[in-house]
Picture 1 (cartoon, helix red, strand yellow):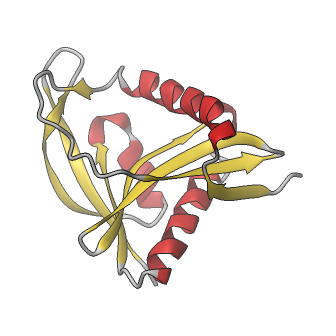
Picture 2: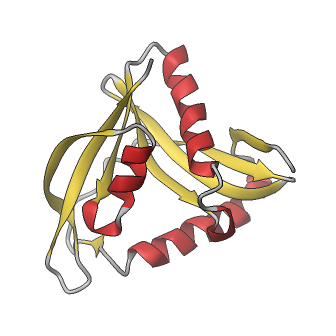
Picture 3: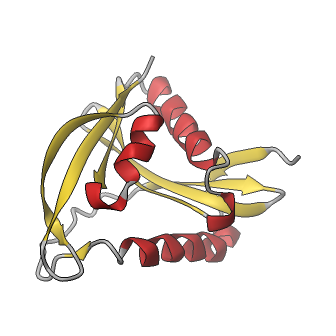
Length: 154
């Protein structure tokens, strides 16, 4: 069985990475979408990682340093590699970066209606806040719940 390799994204990874992100985004848009006329997102450039199996991109994560955390802005795994440890490996790699920077926790937000909150709870994240999402709505325009989560670094 091929080993999973996590590293920074290279230019030649971009097409495969974009396909994975687009597939994940299509699935999420069945549950929520960005609110029209929302303000700018902040513009802090993110660091990007990829997960490789036999040189094929099978997952990706984006993160920034935010306050006293590494904030995971996005994580996506190729559908054929879900539930195989790719997400866990990406988060473990980000956690090592946080440790090296002496930061106490990873943080992220998830939309509750996607079911992803339970996935992140199973990966060691705890809920630290819950509110109506200010920048996202359901496909019909109704409210969705944004859940803030953190995982303390041991």
